[in-house]
Amino acid sequence: MRTVKRLAALAAMLIALIGTGTTVANAAPADWACNSGDLCVYNGADGTGGRCAWSNADNNWLVAPVTCSWAGSRATYSINNSGTSSAYTGVMMYLSPDYQNPFFCMPQQQSIELPRGVLFRSHKWVTTSCHGVV
Image (cartoon, rainbow, N blue to C red):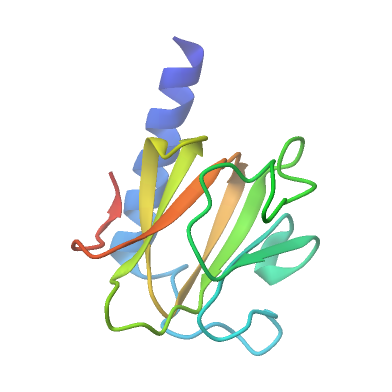
């Protein structure tokens, strides 16, 4: 029950952040290292700390082909979606492996801060409308 309340509070916070545009940028700052077309997550604020990057979907961040070594024990505090494909609108972020427990959709060409951090475990590119928290 405590986890559900915590997730609800974090979801409300993300809705407020995305809705106001105060923490979502249209283009990531130059110091956020992320190749064009990739989704990058960081375990520090402002695109700092450990970074994991993907150019494709990943159903489990803790196993190959791309392994995010710190994702099992450290939260994601910032995200940069440098996606460029016109075939997709954004990346759906999931709290569990195998695309379970959708949390929010990260629009292309945007970055976001997660002040309390979130433990994500999978993500995939989506073609549906990308409006933030699910």
